Image (cartoon, rainbow, N blue to C red):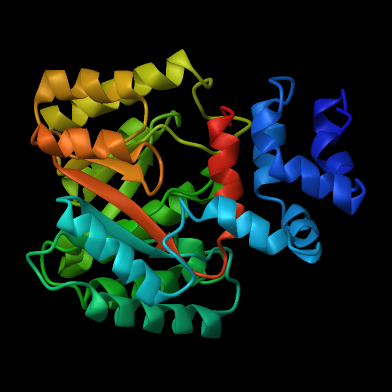
Length: 324
């Protein structure tokens, strides 16, 4: 595939490429040079047009699924529960997530809540370390933020104390709404069944972490994968330093927290400083590291996603492997 020189038009011009060439480019993503910047890679990774093009080709969806399967537990709840049980048997905790985002229909969001409540009932019984995970746009955050708090509370309420639903990070323009929703539900007496995600690259994250810790909500610290135009530390060393500073701050405040990173330098720095801080990783990414951490007595957790909307999640993992 010929490269396009202008950053702003790369994604659009690639999406207009001939379908077969486009499909070959997708399947050979790992061979891309570093000439593509992070914004372009992330745009392609979240492109519905790319998904349609790949799936429309003969054998395209099957080939993509073969490549994606290491990162995705499966298409069904039974698939996810099987993978979760395997990880639990190895001593790892799990957070099970039904794929979905950007829902704008409240009736659909209500159906999603019913699916999550059924999933909660099907999780291995306590003391198995099995949590849920969700993105709030999957339950209509954009169109009904007040109702989203009610829906999140309906999911959290069916969990036993100490078993949590982890709320995922979303892009910067939704951060206020996500934080308000989590704090609302925590204030209903459900803090011990909630988790939130704090992105180290965001300039506001120190204050957000303090608010969540004060509400006794579990905090998952991540670097932050969204490409933002403002309000963030630059990608690379500034974000790494922010991650370490937040990790230390969470420990100083004795906040219930975990570090979710595949960056061994950051992980080991915080483990050396604080002992067995819980570590979270994504399914299929460096699983041998998890097993080593478990042998060392470090609590571990694996994000276990499943469902039909797996394609763009897989593309995000590939983009991250290229530094996006």
